Length: 79
Image (cartoon, rainbow, N blue to C red; front, side, top):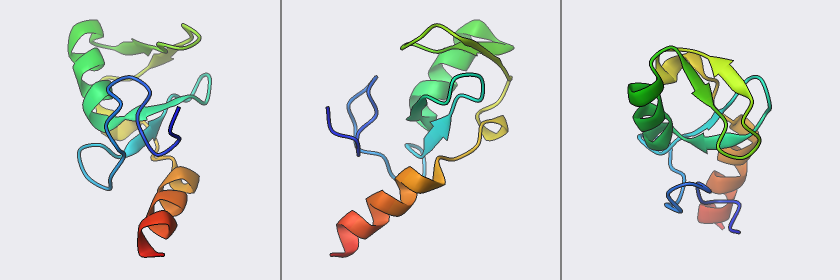
């Protein structure tokens, strides 16, 4: 798997609608777009698609951006 891509939609992460967001309970990362789609269905929590841990939240902005992954992504495209 490409670590620069979301493991759900397989689209490349970016700094906008596909920003990598961390699920706080387990530490897994998915893109903002996939997260918003899941939150629309589950309302006040998200179930990690990889380990099934539940993280409370109602809006994508409540989930922190994976800054390490963003830094790697930006370095990858600036070299």
